[in-house]
Length: 400
Ligand code: PLP
Image (tube, rainbow, N blue to C red):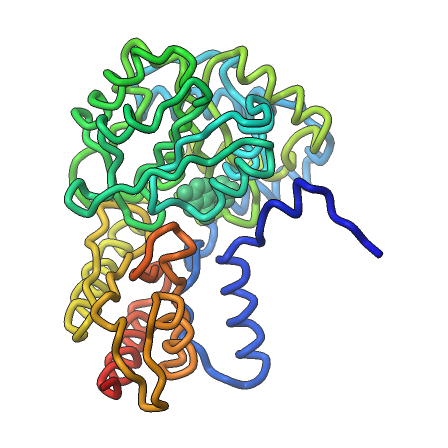
């Protein structure tokens, strides 16, 4: 019989993938479902970007590229990093991969030995702990508090660092809470890190363009001062340019680390798709009006979702500063009795009940390391958000 490796046996399939599969099955069986689990833009890839991909195919740019991408892509990433952080990076600082996700995976694979620890603030994007485990590391989950905006504090960081700590993950805007760190908050973390020269920062800024505060986003590396050389910034084109299926992301950091990542990349996928690289160049350097327009839409959807969910007895949405999720406190539903007579005892119960009763799919907070919440997505139409909230309100009205 088939026996998976210990590596695979240690991890679980992504809860987002599982939720998406469940929605697909129910729909295939004829049950209409309002899907609020989606982790990708509902917008189409911008026209100019699609054209760049098509042109690359027509021009025969369909062969392997350098492991660290085409010169044009590296130049586009350097320009983007300069624009965002004010820092000039060189080519030796850039790694590219099949999505930001693959770059994060490779960064852990390139640095972790058994027993090495990675600090992951919770609520977290579902993949970090499993990616650490898959690469022999130990995730150290550090709970954040709503009072600090679900952000890691210097005190909590300090308390979690041990001699085995290799990385701290800082994801902003955060998935699932939408938390965004101010420059002062980053500087507070940096002050702690100055005393621990072996601890590196994985700054996952894949949602950096999607912000609602009206203030410019501060990349971690831009405020990192003396620890700047220990920051790996991860980004990509998936979220900002509605290019999730193109699979193109990048990491920018110290040349030694980047060299290690590139060695792994040379022995795993060789390079990301040449066609996607050509499209990403145009995404990063071309007309940026898609971002302005899509962020305006996300902002009005956020406001709508926060209003509608906030009106429902027992629910309390957390207002996100960026990204495209609304994390909802559902502790007010826990302990209540359904029309069928069962008591909702956890966010998992609430999520399953919403699927059965309201025909609305959301993802339980436990998947993000946070009980008594569920995550909804605003990467869907206003109509779907309205319909989802209405269906949830009707279901909640049946609870005793
Ligand atoms: N980081 C976070 C926080 C995410 O939510 C995602 C996607 O869901 C990614 C990284 C990976 O994005 P991609 O691999 O498409 O670049």
